[in-house]
Amino acid sequence: MIDPQKRWRPLPDKPDYAGFLSFGGAPLAQEPEHLQGVDVAIIGAPTDDLVSDRPGTRFAPRAIRAASCPPGPHLEAGVDAFADLAIVDYGDAAVVPADPLRTHAAIEQLVGEAVDAGALPVILGGDHSITEPCIAAIAARRGPVGLIHFDTHTDTGREVFGVEHSHGTPMFRLVDGGRVPGSRYAQIGLRGYWPGPTEFAWQREQGIASFFMHDVRDRGIREIVVAALEHVGAGPVYLTVDVDVLDPAFAPGTGTPEPGGMTSLDLLWAVREIAARAEIVGADVVEVLPSGIGSADITALVAERVVREILTGFAISRRSDRPD
Ligand SMILES: [Mn+2]
Image (cartoon, rainbow, N blue to C red; front, side):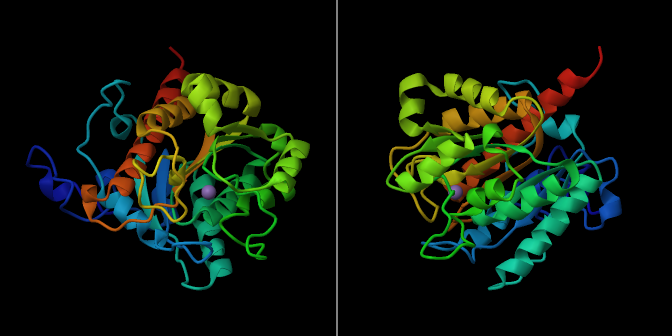
């Protein structure tokens, strides 16, 4: 294990821009045995071979790690996830450029190692196709999982541009393959012009709950989160956040942006609430397309904070699990 904080121990704090690059300055782990006793393993999935529009999310795991912030308790929640939980950065999956199948196998392998060690895998994408191997690794060990999915798009295409293996199809493949029952799958933030009636008819047949952006606008995020949690119900839940659910004003660095989206304020609260209330067994943040370094990249910055809110919510859920 490498502790990026070590050289700064005699000092008050390590500045975020210095030291070995890891998520939140967490210890770097490379071997599965380093995951023993770990609560959360951050895993990078730097791949964007399957995007249908502008590429570049392969650079996101590094950008998200670099858009860090000083440690300390969450000012609203009063919880310091890094103090409450044993969090490590398990590095990146051994991706192979232009070979999405081997890349996905490498992601599934690494996520599986985290699950086998009893750690919560939190994955930094990558394009949205990476959610398929992440959930595959978890479902292989724990059975089918519920899914809460923040996105502009449903990603339930049977194919995109005639291609079945795409960042627009992972949710179809997961439901079709039995890894995510539609009766425990909720989407939040849908808007724009894709997909069409065929996909939505299929979604209804599967029992998938779709909360559109106009639902968030009209009913408010609190009510929508309650409804999504009710739909997925009890049991293991995976949380996936496509950063394009945000309005491009908040997250301009993404490949298929759509105006009229969520605010950072709503999304950050929502993911924390879900992580605190649901039985989270894995989470990812995807489709960040960075172009700046550190906090200069506002899309990587908000993605970093999405992960922090998930960690904070997970820490809250762990606290409430503890016997008094
Ligand atoms: Mn997506």
